[in-house]
Amino acid sequence: AAAGMSGAATRSLAFSNANPAALYASLTVNAVSAGVSVAMHRLARVLPGTTDFSFSFEDFNYNVATAPSAPCVAYAGALSGTVKKNTNWSGAMNWTAVGTPLTIMGKPTQVNTLAVHPSNEDALLAGTGAGGIFRKTDNLSPWTLVTTLTGSVNSIVYEPGNPQVAYAAGSGGVVYKT
Image (cartoon, rainbow, N blue to C red; front, side):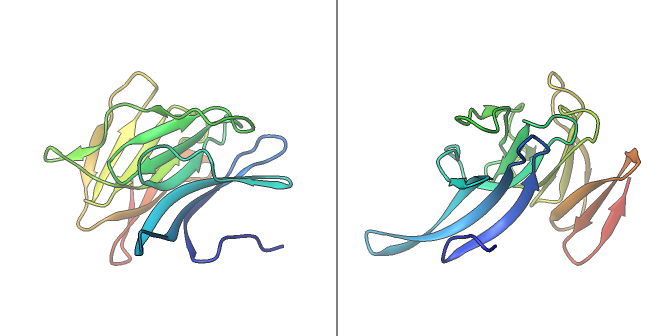
């Protein structure tokens, strides 16, 4: 069955493997405020029988990813370079910052995509609009800039069965392999 919002554009989708599963969607919703059309970025959580738009954090939510090894963990990246984590999939959302905002040459860069390591919920890769690929190996380590590509990084995935290898897709249709 189809469900959605009129005038909304979906940025990313991610399923939790909790029971019951939750679908997270990052949306851009066009709204009118004081006669001016404004694009608002929101996260939606879809559980059986309900859709919840009330848990976006105060930043432009750009994408969402879930942890394959931890059913209740979700991450969201933002235009400000912020990455946040939530560990409560069925109740009130409580987003906490994951390190400091991602920056390139001292300037925050939007988080275009996130990939969560298949067996370590705290190990992440983040791709940015400025072409940076960042890595975080655990919940205590800082973000590390691994490489900078030409253009933006739009998607990152781990290779199934080999979590030591990841692929990143950049603007212009180029795919990079670690």
